[in-house]
Length: 285
Image (cartoon, rainbow, N blue to C red; front, side, top):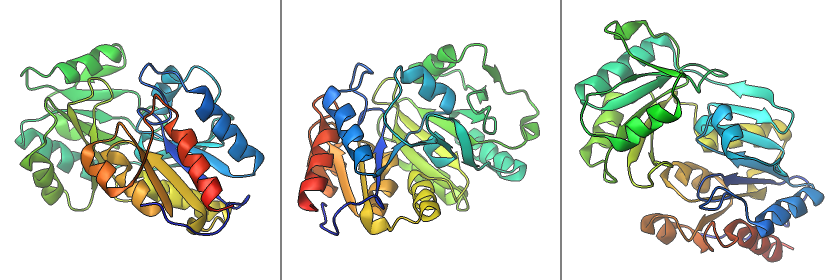
């Protein structure tokens, strides 16, 4: 819930999710949200986008230069200085961990993708069971020419930025828990597909990869006290970030359980980011 701390200063950080939060449903950005980010910059607040997209996907989705200072991408596997594009941090799964994760997903009979290390993590191998999975095949179509079928030698992939399994329904049931139990040394994150809005994605990362981990790394690098932090999101892969920041908001279009846990603002189509920023500034002025 919303917590009152000290007045935001130049030594403060604002982190926003992208899809379903900063971007409207049609992929544009509300003028009020753009202005809110600009105002934060004028106050010297560090502005960060934290997205599950790779940088390749980010540049495809964002058509204008955003008034932000950093982009945390691939759910925290990498971070760049924006708009310069300078890579500041990247993390990969080692070959042995990738091999174990592959075997777990094969045993679970899941359709999944293995992404190359950053900066080539928009390229991936995939394994498809052949069962109906429209969201999975849609993603293959979107990355036509950048993906290939995993051959029988599944142990030869090498390092990877992440693995991503697609479940063709919104309730992962026991599958998510089972994967987490079998891969206790990895960060297994649930998110809702940005493609169809209801399929579940299970993303597997190194243990030191998440939106909150990379946001905390950046805050520490810049000498920012976490008490001077604000975050806003809309989905399950934002939970750790929302729990990390001192001030946390979710937009109206977030799932019911998230709206019950965190302070709610307007939807992504109606200036939710701007509302969160205004509340933060007014409560701590």
